[in-house]
Image 1 (cartoon, one colour):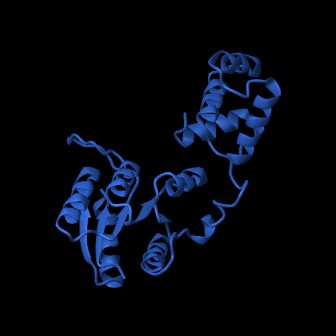
Image 2 (cartoon, helix red, strand yellow):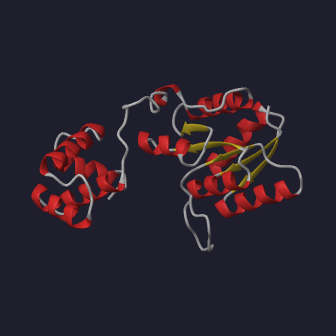
Length: 222
């Protein structure tokens, strides 16, 4: 089981619940932080003291206040911590539910576990901690276990975000194609753009282009 755990969360009630759960589940030394910069400094100090953390549990979204911060999100924190201490296990504990975003957290940020806050969040967090304390390299809750399957989700790229943005301001496929061609973005043909729009509709479960734009806005993509 883990010996030293750091929990980064800015909402007091959730923080208290996580700490209480870890106290019951482990015999670890547990520390907490409400700011990403604070959490990162604690990780660095623990390393320098020769008593490193072996698990970081962090939210992804941290509300900004009067403090000036360098690391503004849990994603920033994870990247910095993994660069400083690659061997530390990291669990992201968040309301994030976009499959491509969660997949990117594993592949680009190097997290070891993901748990979605919700009705079963506490149970899943317990499972994740137990699993990662053993021989499990990565932990994903059952409902999200298919995110790594080939062809399960499309990769959301800058191209897709531009495409949705252009659709949102009323450009036609011809106009979008002309813009892409001028910018050197490929594919830029009408047929390719139409195929990409159809794939995006399927991924975002959109009935039409207006619905696609609406869903993208709701997710903060545009």
